[in-house]
Length: 260
Image (cartoon, rainbow, N blue to C red; front, side, top):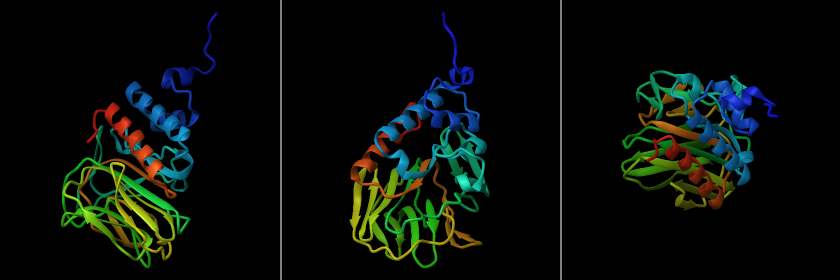
């Protein structure tokens, strides 16, 4: 005798993880390749203790503005769930979300809650240079990530001090992570390219945005033209966690055929 306990679970993704299935259901994704990649990602992040440290995970899968907006951690269609609100000109495809570089950004509705523990990550599929941000929130202390300007990375989190290092290719997975009041690291593809003691000085009071820089509540500048294929927001991650996050994300990107 055979029976199906949960027909929707069986038909939709074949994944036993309830969080993965909640995201796939909210986004209306039934493609088996994407479903399997999301299931593997979620179960991997949970087994490595990373899942609980991230407030927002944006896999940018499904190829539309609707599927790209959902937060994997909490796929409710609300600001409180850190669902993305896309503004301006975006091109959405199976490879991710591409801003037009002139008026496009995405509001995350996320503000860090811990001055000395915060992280932001961005997976870029574009090699471009210019004064524009992948993440940005300012006034008083700053938090931002700028992948390539004058062949340098610029990054800071909850601080007024910059951190820079040479970078001639803006493609790849980038993360800035603060794990203490005087401990900041910037990673590219899991390698720590900056290790700094830049002091924390507060938390920017405005929502973090993706692909631009919010100077004030109504002032958005430095619009990016780099395609986003993944992004996260959360508390600080250490070297091992950052490396494991990169490996998990790169596995998903490779499964979807869009890795760089």
